[in-house]
Amino acid sequence: MTALTDHPAPARASRGGRWIDHWEPDDERFWAATGRRVAARNLAFSILTEHLGFSVWLLWSIAVLSLPGAGITLTVGETLWLTTVPNLVGAAMRIPYTFAPARFGGRNFTVVSALLLLVPCGAFVYAIENPGIPFWALLLIAATTGLGGGNFASSMANITHFYPAARQGLPLGLNAAGGNLGTSVTQLAMPPLIVAFGLVAVGWVWMPLILAAAVCAYLFMNNLTRATSAYTVREMAAAARDRQTVVMSVLYIGTFGSFIGYSFSFGVLIKNQFPDVKGAHYIWLGAFAGSLARPLGGWLADRFGGARVTVVTFLLMGLGVVAVAGAVGAGSWPLFLAAFLLVFVATGLGNGSTYKMIPAAFRARELARADASDPLAVEEAVARARRAAAAAIGIISAVGAAGGVLVQQAFRISIEQSGGIGPALLTLAAFYGVCVALTWACYLRRARTGEARASLAEAGV
Figure 1 (spheres, helix red, strand yellow):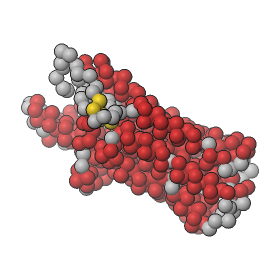
Figure 2 (cartoon, rainbow, N blue to C red):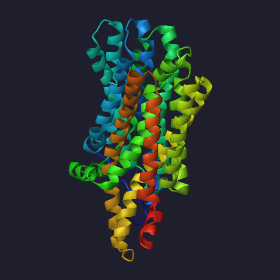
Figure 3 (cartoon, rainbow, N blue to C red):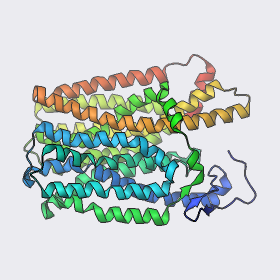
């Protein structure tokens, strides 16, 4: 921790804009005097922009249910592709978006990332007003909503620097949950809007909100000079080869990949398996439940350890998808909905616990390698772990989002090859079993030395 000062320096703007040069959130007096207030303000408007990013990202997940009414007729496979491509693009955008706040400033890039959301909204309006456009053009237009998927990475990378290391859990959980809720807000608000004003309104409604978010970010957010040296492309490349990054990427595919993949696919699955049920009335429930569960997963991980909570969530996800398969076989809509909601809640809990595990795992490894009797060595180990984890998080979040594509494609192939989703569900259940084994083998199996066990416990793994 930074040494306390008798008179904490204020957050000081420079460069003729909203840059802050002096920012020491780990200094308790600085944090109490000015840091907490400034951080909370930046968090609030970061959540707003990230929320709209998720809302736009999931736009086509609800729009596809109403395309026939707009004169656009697609096969089930084409419909799933229309919800898959935004997911794929959003995953890819998370890599450059992770670097952007450090390169351009968190406040500056929040303004830019908000304004970029106008592109998919405008393109959506064009597509609906021109129903005769070819499918490839429709697919390209849907791909632009992936810009909203990148907002999560830039928002989380930016907000991390505003808060003390010991107090990051709650604000990061709120930031992530606020964004994730954009998924359910889109799926809840759009059906009545479509009924009242037509499908084209789905594109228009977000534009004034996006402009308001950009203006608020411009007026009320800040750039941090200290964040410009967060980590480098070389460090991210090294993180990509790190065993911890690989393992956590697989686990994040299982948690966030499942959450976003199910969120994109839920409406299509309801329509395919229970055509008499009005899916638009229920599609929002899954993402809503998963979003609310995410901060709870982080809190449970703080209390019981991220790996323990993650194992339990994967077990719940496996049992949940098996129950969904049973509901499909029995033709029971109530069981289908209840089982899928259990799966969504488990993905939310897992999102919170795995995100807690990422910095904890790097910290545990570095502490195990350091000389515990040397305070300087311990401090250097913690610093190395923080930089390594920051670089790894960008990769892990991108890979996790890309995992949603695998979930969607599993359903597409299952429906096209067998006419149902049973094979996809059983495959996912087996994958969750692999994730349980991987978590146990890498983080819960009895450590070989007392020092390693102590490091794991101290880091909160």
